[in-house]
Structure formats: structure tokens, C-alpha cells
Image 1: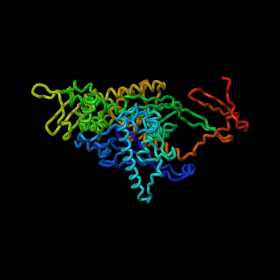
Image 2: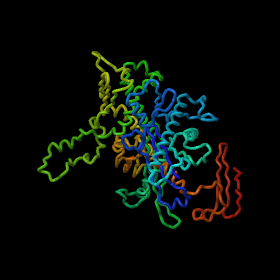
Image 3: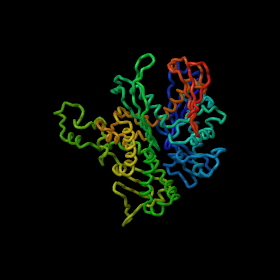
Length: 560
């Protein structure tokens, strides 16, 4: 038996799996916890990476031509023609409601675009799973194991803000894509929110440190300490804050436990909003001469957005390292030190200015300097856009641009160069400011005193976001974040957490809906009453039972 998680993302998606075996929950608990294996060898990717682009390209009849990195490369090479249909970010355009007799009929609330995105999602899931199954078979070839689809239990991550209808839609998509059958047990596919999955992964990695009273890698946590988990994803940022407290067990021994004290989700904070800001900038640059003709025309904007797709796709990579120091940047204190440095008069083998810690990579304090980062460059040498550019021009056919923007163009080459300051102010700052404001509100709600913050999610890997947080909420600040813990694989936190949830579920006996009359076990022997609350749409009913008696009858409370 295998447990497989599909992390369906707005811009990138991935999968991972674990071999759980055909064992009872008791047998599973007695075995070593299974290893989580990420699928890294995605088609047409020149390097191993845990995710592949959430993009597909179809012909005019909606027959799939390319998906993932193959679709990305197809777009970048300028091969997209008028008859092709490109689907990107289709996850955010799925129907929010479905017809009673099925999801694939258009209703009054479902647009044609939403149905097309639904079809795109089905095709994408089919390809994603087929490749995952091949990766599992290749990994098991040495052991001689064959992967049977019927032996796979699936977990799919969805945005936290999705309603029950949208979650049900993912089950229908999984059926249409061939992952499961409509006759399968409902537990063969489990839907889990991205924020819950990310929390699950963070607790698995973080709690051994947080709940330890010993110094572990320089981390010391004490009773009453608080820690925060921030999942900065594509469309939202979710934050949960926990407090560590001491609890005495039945054996009389004290142990540290956790209690969630705040949680929240903020929109317009994720990296998808960076994409929107970048798209606005690129439209103004590429078609600024005709802006009055398209700025209020939604269909025209969509047409122009399809033309700049090769540029916006380049930004998917550019944004992941924005906020890193350029090779030429040196702080003034270091520059002055190097200017006066005399190697013959120094006993040190390495150069340290003694004022800052820039040499060790601690450069967050310089993130606001205009010369800190390098330019962001976009280049196109093939594609429809070269013939349809409408650049603003002045006397002598000279291209007019804003400060910080440089444009070069000839018949076969188009290049846009944006300064670090321009990108910071026009694209990143508004989204990052919203995220930091949200952090401050949540920390204030928890009355501060945060000792650790774990930053995960795709957007959580942004160097600019991380350094801005360190700058604005340092130690000594009333709302400081404590020690910032980041993960090189933070973008896979939700994927791993969802799979951990699936593995843990298989290691515990299924809970019955029937309350047994026997209560002599260690966990319940100290209680002598059972209270049942029935919370319905029209009211609440309550009943109770005295556990000291062997009578199974519940007594209803009627004198409200």
C-alpha cells in the first residue's frame, strides 16, 4: 500500500509518497515510520526539483499538447500560436458551485472559463499522477514491486478558504482524472487544507525543539513560551500561534504540551499578488502607447496578458531570489575596512570589518538600500509579442520609460531591465507590507513574547520577505518574532504535512461513532459523566449519562 499526496498549487504543483504496506494499525505502529519520498524528476526539467509548473497548453479542440515544464518551455520558446490555448493559474478559476447532477454542466453561476479551467485541471491531474506512478515504479524496480493504482490512498491539498462544494469538486476531478473510482471508499481520497497540512509538517519538525527544556542546536524553550507558524503561500498567508504549557500526566510526571491561542488567514498577501503587480507593470511597458484603448476593456486586457505570458513566466523564477545581495554590493563599513586593510599588519586570515556581519551572510539590515540587489531582466527573442509591442515613444522615436526601467528592442530581440529599487517599490513592497501588518496583528492578539517563528510556503522562501520581517520585527521590538526558522524545502511543507496526516491516520484504529458502555480505560476512568451536544441548524439539543451506572440510556435535557 502507498500513500500519495498531490499538492496542487496555483503556480507550481508536486507530489510525494510513502510505502505504508498492508498492515493493521497496530502492526504499522510497531514498524519504523515510513520515509517520505518526493518526486523530483519531472519531465523536461534539467535539474531535480520537487515541483513543476501548473501550466498546460492545448490545441483549439482542447487536446492536451504540453504540461508542466514542457508547457513552460513551449511558451518561452515563442511557439504559441493563435490556435493554441494556454492555461495558467487555473486552480484559482475553478467553479465555486456545481450543478446538482454533476460538476461538468454549465449552470447560472458557472462561467465558460470556469468549465474550461475544470477541464484543464482534470488533464493536469491525470498527467501529474501518471508521472508520479511511473516514478514510484522506477523507485521500486530494484525491490521488484509493482505499483497498482488500487493500492494507493490519495491526499490532496486545497486552499484553506475553499468551501465544501469546492472540496467536493476536487473529488470529482480525481474521479474524472482516473485517480479513484466513484465506487471507492470515501477514505481512499482525503482532502486537507494547505494551512492545516503545513502546520502538521511544522509540528513534526519543530516540536522536538520547542517542547524540549534542553538546549537543542541553541534553542531553549520554557514553560509559557510561544511560537508562531507562518505559511506564506500563493494566494493567502495563514498564521497560527501556540503556547507551551506544563501538564501533569497520570503517572505524576510533568511534561510540556502546546495549545493554539490564535489563528488567521489574510488574503492579498501571497506570491500570486506579486504576479498581478508584475503583470500590471509589464502591460504598461509593453503596451503603454495604447493604454487608453485597453485599460478599461477586460477582454482586451486578457488578450494582451496572453501576449506577455513569456515575460510573466520568467518572473516565476526571478521572484524566488529577489532580495538577495548583488555580487557588487559591499556595505560602506566593509568598503572602508578594505580600503585601509594592510595584510602584512593583520594576523587574521579572513577579512572581517568588525562593524557588521555581512561576511557571514547577515545582510538583512541593507535590504532597503537602492544598490543592494541587482536588476531584474526579461528577455524575448521569439514570439507573437515582438510584432505587437506598443511602446511609448518620444521625439526621434526614442522609447520613453519610467526611472529605473530600461528597454532595448530590435527586430529579433526585446529586453526589459528593471532596477532593484523599481521592483521593490512597484511590485514587492505593497504585498510584503500587507504580510508584515498581518504578522503584527496576530502577534499583538497573542500578547507578544514569541520565541520562535517558522516561515514556510512558497512565498515564505522569498529572501526579500524574510529580510523585511527580520528588519521590522527584531529582538527588542514589542512584537518581535523571536528566532526565525526557515526551511530550504519550505515550499513542500503542505505536501509533506498532508502525507504525514495520511500516514498517521493509517497507524490508528478507525474510531467508531458508537459510544461504548465500558469506561475503565486509563484515559476516562477519572470521569463519571458523558455529555452529548447535538448542534443543528435550527437549535441545540443536549443529553447526558451517569457513567457510574451500567444503564446505556441517555437523559435528555428538556427544561431550557
